[in-house]
Image (cartoon, rainbow, N blue to C red):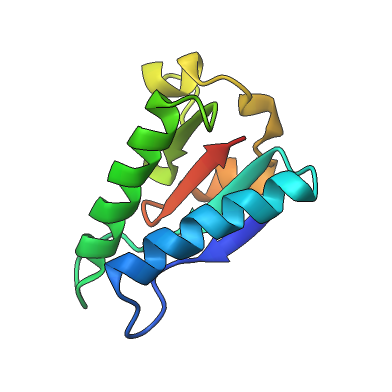
Length: 109
């Protein structure tokens, strides 16, 4: 699974959203099925702004049918309703399931 870090030091929300869109475009071109975006979990350093902007953008992409779905790392549990309803969850690798990192967002293309 392709992995992209969007919460680099001194990253702005505008550049993070731009990198999100570009990464999705490049992943489609290379026929990837899922991408793991590292957005931070928002406790320190202003990463909550990046996380919020990325989640808003992903919601718009989902609503316009440009992605099949997305899920936070902390929601990756077989008993979670959002995980159970996620289309394409078979493309998520087993390591991401084990990590359950709250600073990650998995996007299904």
